[in-house]
Each structure stands twice: as structure tokens, then as C-alpha cells.
Image (cartoon, rainbow over all chains, first blue to last red; front, side, top):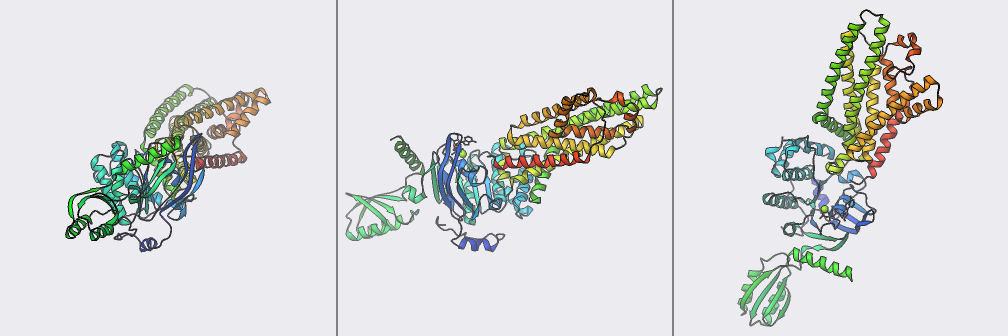
Length: 332
Length: 282
Ligand SMILES: Nc1ncnc2c1ncn2[C@@H]1O[C@H](COP(=O)(O)OP(=O)(O)OP(=O)(O)O)[C@@H](O)[C@H]1O
Ligand SMILES: [Mg+2]
């Protein structure tokens, strides 16, 4: 599925139709915040942060330790009161509890009542959310995070990773339209991380919006449509991954490039060339599938193809670049 | 106020209290206290069988109030240590995060906690107190004139103390709030005793200390009302002079005005706690 499509592919049977209608409207984004600021004593933790998460969009919230990601998330959810700024959750002002009715949250510091069983924790959250979730769906939710065989075990006896899985189930159980995950894989094994990736993809397919804070950039790169990069309490950069990473590029070593071949290259994307070395930034974002056709067309046009090298800047390189530039700018 | 949230949180709180070790500790202490009561009263029965009923009655009343004081102390400690860590502890551990991120008003969560703790504390005090009264009835055949009112006042005393502990837990750390609540509780009890002695010595300034402390924290006032309900009504008439200033006998029942103040006090404290809790970052 294309990263830009906001519509859910298939509507789950239990989701009311009006939700889909809502998604059809350009209406309210899943999350909107503007000018958020927070000071703890003399330290400014967050300073004028604004961004939006569209309906059904998966947005990464990135940044180094202490950048203010968790503080922003807590302000979005009304856990910490902002010194300035406004928040709308699913179109409702966040200072009203009702705004959080369809919002799921996995805190960075995940801890659940140790004297309850996993099932009871989910029951509690369903009741607090006011949603109607049949028992079968709750069990499904536990199975989804890989806890079905421990559903009647006391949370106090869970390992750390199991507690984080339970936290994911809690975030997902009450039919959310927006899910906020603060480092959802910090305690998970590689299998668990893959599970979370699958869950994120499934959420995206259902049209659930996700705000994901993670230090695992590979993960973010694979599932997120857009990213907001925070540094020292400010938004250092934001945009779609293509905007941030500059899209997919192909390096080509070519000989005998005629005007027709040049035109064919230009049709594929933005072209820079120097001697026989061509770099095409693919217009059709995110897709390398167009490359074989391009090569075969070039061959047909009489071009001699020496090498084809698809390339993409990694999010990690880009993030480090943004942060370094920011630091240098601040020092000057 | 959303009843669904309040009741859900109250039920959760009761479940927590009944599943954690606090309940077992409370039950253990109560059983020990019941044993002491049974032993003490059987001794009174043996010693006083030759004496006048007046003396036996006096001894029974004093010992019963002493035992009830022990019980109220157990209940106070138990609930203060349940209520103290509740909000502060949940915020510290992170347990509050996922709850408060739900579509809930913080005041509803607070009232739910209070309701659950009050139900648990009152239930415990009423049942354990009743067990003690039955033991006394079985051993010496004494049944207090106003058992129901006495138990209700003990329950109210417990509720007042846990309200204070809950308020403290919105501002200070988990263990400290329980400890401070029990400390204040002890201080007002001492102030109450001092004031009754001051009454006897007709020292007005000192007596005012007791009055003020009974208004600031109504536990001691309620406790005195409960004692009055448990002791034999003829007692004070017969031996009035000797009884003035006795820490385990009480001169007068509670006035409706004081009971109204107790209710107002709880509402005020809860409102204050809700205001603080609403502004708190978690
Ligand atoms: N309760 C608090 N009291 C005082 N300072 C705080 C508090 N919470 C956060 N801060 C400060 O705010 C800043 C941002 O913290 P925050 O937890 O939002 O960072 P983060 O981006 O989530 O970092 P990490 O990646 O390590 O989780 C830090 O400088 C931190 O010291
Ligand atoms: Mg964080």
C-alpha cells in the first residue's frame, strides 16, 4: 500500500461506518499540536513544538535523549500540563477527557497493577475507556501481542518484555483511532520487535493513526510515513521520509546517451550527471520497482549500461546530519 | 462526575487492598487483638466475680475502650499505609500513566480511590469491632448501650484518617504520607488527652488545644464519641469525679454540629486533594 494513502484498505467488521466517513472528510487530523512549551524549573524541556498526525498516518517522533519527546507525548495526553500551546486529539481539545476516548497509549515507563492478571488489566482499561469490547476481542488483543498463554497470570510475575507487550495490548484494546507509543520496543527481543512492526503495519492498514517514538531508526524507516525530529525541545526537521531522505536514488554508469535516452531518464526523475555518471532521484517516491523497466528502455534506446546502483540515505545518517548541523549552528 | 469511572476505580482499590499483603497483616493483628480481648475479659470475669457489678462494669468499660483503641489504631495504621502510597506511589512507579491517559477526570479517579478505601476501611473496622463486642458479650455478658453508633463512629474515624493520608499523598512521597498521617493522628489523640486533663484542672488555655485539634483533625473527637457509645451510661453518673480526664472514658456523646463538621471536613479535604492532583504532572 502506498505510504500516502490515508484510507483504510479494508474496514474491520466491527468498526462503525461513520468512522470511514470521517476518514473521507479532510476534517480534523488525528493529532494536532501547536506551540507546545514546558519548563521544569530552569530547564526548558520543550520549546514551541508544533506538528500534525493525519488520520491513518504513522508518524515517527525522533531525537536524541533528553530532546523532549516523552515530555511532548505527556503533554499531548494531558499527563503533564503545558506552559503554553494547544492540543487537539481527534478534533477535540485535549483538556477535555472525552478527547482521549479513542486514544491508546503505551508509556515509556510501562507498569501495570501487579496484583491483577493480564486479562483484568485489559478489562479495567476497557471499562475506563467506556468502549464496548467483547471478551473475544480482548483475548484476540492479548494474542496479538503474544500473551495469550499468560492471560490469567498475575502481572507481578511478568518479565519486563512481557509487561511491555501487555502495555501494547492496553494501548490497542479499546478500539483506538490514534495510538501513541513511547519507545514500544525498548524491552523487547528481536522477535518482539518484529511483532511490533507487524502490529504497526496492521494498524496502518486499519487506518489507525500512530505516533511512534523510537530510537530504532530502521524500524521507523520501515513503517513511518513521516517523521518529526526533535532536538533540545525544538522541531529540528520534519517531513515525509522522502522529503527527509531525498527519496530513492539510482546511480548509473552509462555510455552513448542520446537525446531520447536523456528524455527517458528525465521521465524517471530528477537527473544529475557528470561524464558517464548519472544520478536519478526517482520521482515515483519510495519505489525501486521502476528501475528494471528504466534499464531495459535505456538498452532499447542504444545506451550501454555499465552499472546500476540503487541507493538511499539512511535515516540514521540523516538524523545525525540534522543534529550536527543544529549543534554547529547553535555554537556559532 | 462520571459514576462509571468512580465505581471502577473504587472496585479496583478494594481489589488491590484485598489482594495485597496489607489485608493479611490487618487480619493477623485483629486476631491477636481478639485473643487479648478474650483473655483480658475472662480475667476480669474471674477477678471481679466477688466484687460489685459497678466495679466490674467500670473495668469492662475501660478495658473495652482500650481494646477498641487498639483496634482503631490497627485500622488507622492499615488504612493510612494503604491510602498514603496510593496516588504518590502510582505516580512514582508509572502505574498512573496509563490510567490517567484514559478519558477520565482526575477528580473522578481521586473520589473513586477515596470511596474504595473508605469502604474497605469502614468494612474492616465494623466487622473487627463487632467481633470484639461479641467476644466481650460471650466472656462477661456486657453489651454496649450504643454498639451500632460506636462502630459507625470508629468507621468514620478511619475514613477521616485515610482522607488525610490521601490528601498528603497528592503532595508528598508515598511512605512519608502514611507516616505523617499516623503522626498527626497520634498528636491529636495526645492533644485530646491533654485537653481532658486540662478540663479537670480548669486550665482553659490548655483545654482549647484539644478543641482546636478536634476541629483540625476530627479523629480524636470521633474516637471520644465512639468511647461514649461503648461505655456503660450509668458509669459517669456514679463515679463522675474519678472519671474526669480518664483517657479511656468519655464525658459526652457527640453533637450533631460536630458530625456535620466531620462531613464538611471530608468534603473540603477531598476538594483540596482533587485541586492539587489535577494540577500535578505525572
Ligand atoms: N519530571 C521532570 N522533572 C524535571 N525535568 C524533567 C522531567 N521530565 C523531563 N525532564 C527534563 O526534560 C527534558 C526532556 O526530557 P524527556 O523525557 O522529554 O526526553 P526524551 O526525548 O523522552 O528522552 P529519551 O530519549 O531519553 O527518553 C530533559 O532535559 C529532562 O531532564
Ligand atoms: Mg523519552
